[in-house]
Image (cartoon, rainbow, N blue to C red; front, side, top):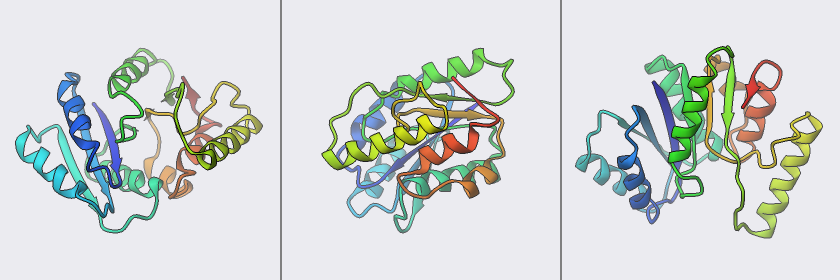
Length: 196
């Protein structure tokens, strides 16, 4: 089974769309929603959604204080690795940047790649309307990836990201807590994982 972490930080307004998409996915996915220290009504919206839906497939963790994008994902990975003994874990954004159907596509690619012991499925972001600073930050991360021979990855923060067969606790200890989380995951996995 695949486990998907969705970190949410002040996503109160985008959660209705997210939850509608979750309900439309028919593949057996364990969803782990992380309230990553939100200061708006995110927590209330998540609880409302969970009370109205079959929560066997959906779990929820509240991080008390936001300590960065990566920290929210790492909280979910730690929970899934320690409490659920999860083997296949992925994550995506809560704000609708990536359709959840892309997770299903990525999971099918991962299933078709069973001959590869350790592999990662990484999404491709085709376009995004970001601030000038965010675009500069992304270009800098992409330049770092090129230094590490990731020629085909244009956007390190593109989602979804799905990984199979890794020591999850070592991964979260080695990776950043902030916006560099996805980049640090790519660098950590580059030696022994095939990225597809």
